[in-house]
Image (cartoon, rainbow, N blue to C red):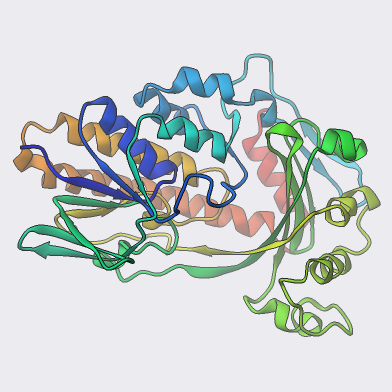
Amino acid sequence: MRHRIAVIGGGPAGLTFARVLHRHDHAVTVLERDPAPDARPPGGTLDLHEGMGQLALDKAGLLAEFRALSRPEGQAMRILDTDGTVLRDWQPRPGDRANPEIDRGQLRDLLLGPLDVRWGRGVTEVVPRTRDGVLVHFADGRQETFDLVIGADGAWSRVRPAISSATPHYTGVTFVETSLDDIDTRHPGLARLIGDGSMAVYGVNRALVAQRNSGGHVKVYAQFRAPLDWHTNLDRHLGLNGRAGLDLADAEAVRSSLLALFDGWAAPVLDLLRHGTAFVHRPLHVLPVSHAWAHVPGVTLLGDAAHLMPPLGVGANLAMLEGAELAESIAAAPGPEDLDEVVRAFEEQMQARAGRWAKMTTAGLERLVSPDPAEALALFDDVQPS
């Protein structure tokens, strides 16, 4: 008899896990709280690394389809000084597919394929070690039991409390996201400024980053160090004289405050904020660098649920690779009685690797949004090809 396996969360980690198991003819139940695939914006773009996200897609049999959708030109990276001077301009070499970009929505649709996802199934609690297996409580009052429940439900995971008391903490860095549509037609000057991939400007404890998605869509991120409640008193928390509280739902007030925060930067750079359509507050939270847990039979975690770290291009890649590796290990298990040992061995390997990446990305965030903008430039010099 095959195991009853459920993965909670329809993001990159959960869908990769389910897709690889599906490829090995193993049934898996995907439970997603969103009522439909297009219930909310899927987010920005992801660069999938050859030895991580792309390897996971290869294990799922989807690498060729990914390559047809991805944007190798999106690997381009340009760094400007606050006065608009171009400091670095890295362009991918012909045929370079080390880290091509793909929109999150395109990746989701690629992974969904033939999977049977139960949409609108929000989970409120997971209870291990019941008589019939792992008990999953749903927001609508229903319950269901499984032999293995995998929490791939992100930063504020409802599965994590079943095996760990850890909760995310604020990093001291906040992102405010906005976006521009049809940039090549409506804002050709900004399109040229950004180039084919990403553009970043680093100042003292703040940065502006613009990143192309497909179809002329650009995401812009204002990044700065501030208390979590920075918007309650801009004068005290950000040094914006005479500005008191800010209503984060008031787009024009947010725009005005950000323009004041980045006052003195080059006009074309500030146009990224002037032309933004809406503003979303995204304070960065992380789990402890060394987050680990004692193995609990029947429950485990993937991706941000297991090791939430700063968004420096690793999280989704690591999550997808973990999902693929766990699925392959389960598919290769000699017998049903080996499932628990397979999961235990996976957790040990995952936690050690994730700890190394969490340490590196935490140090990277400290350098990218720091009192010394030269630290950000030096970090990119370390990681970009010469």
